[in-house]
Length: 167
Image (spheres, rainbow, N blue to C red):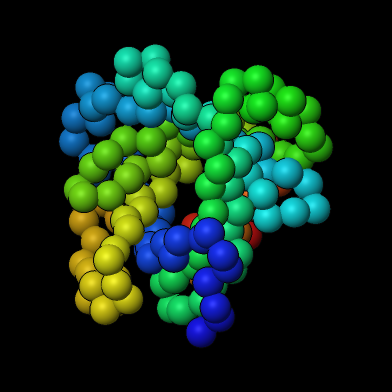
């Protein structure tokens, strides 16, 4: 296991492709809209989150890579709108998605650049809890370690949509 970088928190999470047709009542469920910029040639992500009541949060994050089966250190710095605007001109690829809180986790429905891909993710307090977790029925294929379905990878592929095998 890799040491956690200073100021980082360890995120323990699993992810699945989701079948939107199997999720009841999603259209009336509140959501947050998330705009991400994956900064070129880095592991940095600039994020704007607009909540259901139009409240806006800005942050700059960095994921450091896997340090356990489901664990990855992450650091976030909260920004002012002015700081966000300054950094938003950096080169990189973008995504836009809606995040719904559902079944104890989050369901991300991508709008751009790959509309229609849905990813269910859930965080855990420890590796053992993550290991024994049984996902909801709408979670159709685990993609926790499938690099074709990271946010940065989805941003890079643009209009080309990966098939069920991730290619």
